[in-house]
Length: 485
Image (cartoon, rainbow, N blue to C red; front, side, top):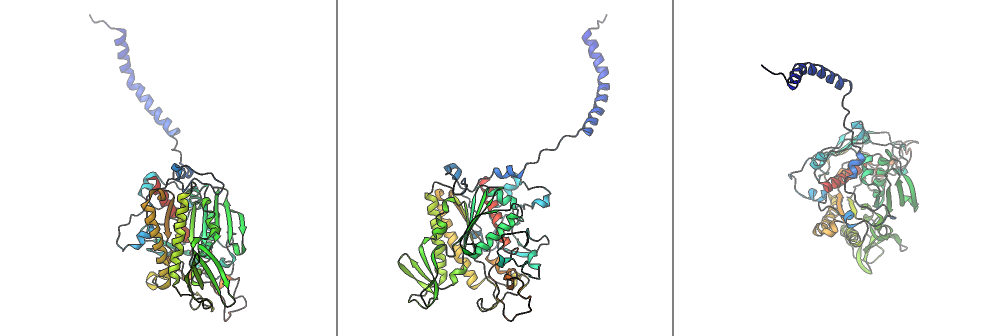
């Protein structure tokens, strides 16, 4: 006789009821997921992406305290677009991923995933490219930006053609993202960026202010000197200071000395210009841009030792090529920056040398020469040669010399990063981007004049010079991605 236990009875009932329970649960579960779907993963805000990047330095303007050696450490993998440019064609170049503009993604900003960061090459040959039509146009215009110098506000001065606004520089070997003002300010958060040099440095600065101002308007907090020679702006959204220092020689100089017979400049190559040099401890990133003032008559000295002169008829001195002293100015400047930062207990510094920007006068600049072209040159129409090529080469060589010094000493490379913003070729191909006669308002309002003064040196804003800052931001991003690999 079999004995039925309570446990066996329970097991038997469970087996009988289990299929019916499953048949009931599965539809209910499907109904639940349909009515209450799983929430999406939270989006990572760009702020947290950039907070993981190694900052340029830990100093916040001149009032900041010194940072620790660990915070000051710089990566040895210095971006060197100049070395890439000096090699023969045919080098293997990695193709970095593009970072699109925020509006193209439909979000406040774009977060670059770690995988994409690691795929970005540390260098890019920005000079190998072409100007291509871009229907989107610039980030700002002549009325939306209040920091454009009057002489570069071509649209408000009545320039009739607008095609010059719709060309964008496209490198062939890498993708150049559109300028993202949010990213620029995040990278420089709490830092001081200084433009040092002549009116071309100021031109690039004012372009940058307009591009950044399309996202976060700056406040002018300091101004001294005529013709906007010394100014500083503050971007309160990211605690960023941006300054301009008038120093057309970088080294110590006396402008337009007059001996009663002739105006000439007097330059001293044994020391840098302390009008900006004395603020180096408070500067986290500096953009150096000079050139055109070295074409003027000048006497050159090293302390009390006379080195020679250029085109000075009223002084008995040895004529020397200005190319030599132009290189010596950069040699003195870069050495001074490196030596001072090495001795300093404060922040490190990033140094960018913007190479020579050619003029496009057709005829003598001081005899009513003009720049009437309304389209860029194609690459096969114009070659980089003569003075423009020589000026660029001098700058490239001095940057390369300084980089040898940086790469040979880890203590120095931790405090200074250096590269050249090589825009000479890009600028040479844009004869259409200058104010020309529209440096003044409505120059032909009273009809066509026989002679009208033209500006074929500086650049309209907006205009081609915006590309300089687009490339500069890309350089800064590559520095950052190299530092977190």
